Image 1 (cartoon, helix red, strand yellow):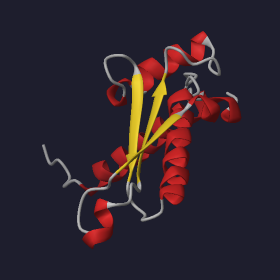
Image 2 (tube, rainbow, N blue to C red):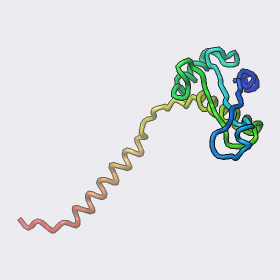
Image 3 (cartoon, rainbow, N blue to C red):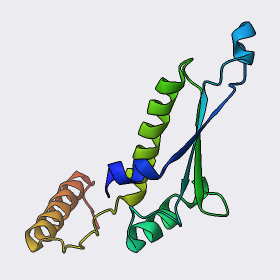
Image 4 (cartoon, one colour):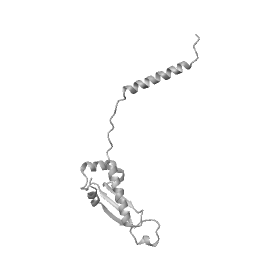
Length: 134
């Protein structure tokens, strides 16, 4: 995955942020909306696209477009940096492939120790019983 190539494929749009902010909020477009089209991406291979489709399918639209918003800061530049970092994090998590677990056998020594301990505990409990007078 080439991050610089992916970042060049992103499209940004500045929108007026919602919420409180006084008179300035009506003039300044500080909210940033990031869109990334997974189907038309040249930076990702076909295998990576399939992996992302399965792993982050809940975040994609029906046209396989990822849309992220950020209006945390009053500065448009800071919001853009935040949303790009968030995007890269989502892509990295989506491309992560966990290691396949290899099943291992229980060692014979462990099995023998467990059985030996069971017998020992059984003998201790046997000795605690009242003697049978029959």
